[in-house]
Length: 420
Picture (cartoon, one colour):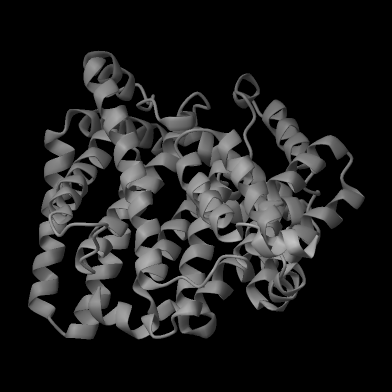
């Protein structure tokens, strides 16, 4: 058996799994599941399986992820709906599988790390081109739907997660250009430039606020970090003004975004008047957060349990006039979700799980990690990102990939900040 393990192509399967996780973000949930299982099995079917398990447990970030899973597991003791509890625990298994799987990934050199970022960039670029062609083919219909609050069709029918992927792809595209990445030829930079410009324009055409807002926030973070480190205050101010001007022009001259903004203003007026029409998307978000907060207030210590959060939300939707005719939703805020489902204990563990990997070992000095952290943080404020397979896969894949690169190459903590 050991003889077989010695020649087992672990490096090949690790890379195949990471490739599957990237491709799966825009193709299939089945691909995501298979890739997750593959990277886990690759760490266990390994001549160094014992060392991998030890490295997994010894990593402080991984221990927090294990604790996060145990919080969900423990909530089964006071959850009546065991079926839904099992489903929620299943959704948190990647917090165990992917960190363990990454222990078998060989040291990430700068070239290897940039390769994975480039594969992600071109994957999102390819998917965006397909979505754009479909948009052009149904231009009038889709713009009409946008004015009524309906999104442009997206891969895996998840326009919110796809918009976040586009936002991060734009950041990685700029990062690769600054680091002069190339697979084979220096001429590739022109393809990168064209792809980057297309994605910047397309994310506005796609007109999903989550992606657009997080992109602008991420760009502001980059500008302010650059401004402070280089003390180029005038150039920083000019960059901010240009960013604001581009946003203003996009809202006024890109038809899809103009329609989306018009619908948002319409809903905002209703909300200001106190008319939370549950048929409207923003009203639904607000209602779900309000109901989630009410559940958390009644169950502050342990929450209602990961298994019963859905039933408790269903009850509130049925009790309140107007919302009983709308499909019940989980709280559209990951922080509120943890408070309602697992109480203050789960909430504190969740905070540790998102802040500790960024703060520990001074990883916050790596600008790419900081920008990714900001994108996900704002996603958590508007969505229950980690209760969806696609959101969990995207979050863990790049958190672990960037974290591993920083840990394998500690010098990047300073060089990345200075160069980006």
